[in-house]
Picture (cartoon, rainbow, N blue to C red):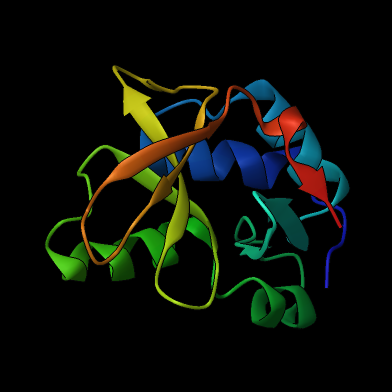
Length: 130
């Protein structure tokens, strides 16, 4: 279930990631912190940004982007500069790629079986939110 997000939680995530998130991604998450998106005919469940404003939101956001990225690192072929932002329920992830101190605008599908990255969008706004 998607819901709004205060900017302070985006800033906290960026601080923990030690990198700035793409502007269009942040704007989308402020309006709908989670929810589903469609990419190439598949439905992906977006990982939220961790929101500690109350117990209900903590429970709804415990599968946040940082926690999900850490769990992906256990696969062994997950790129060390990637951030998982959505999953398809089969292990594949939509990811952002970090360069220096920023995540780039482009969105990639990371295959958990092969470790391959395939670009699916130049910007988060190209994706269809459901």
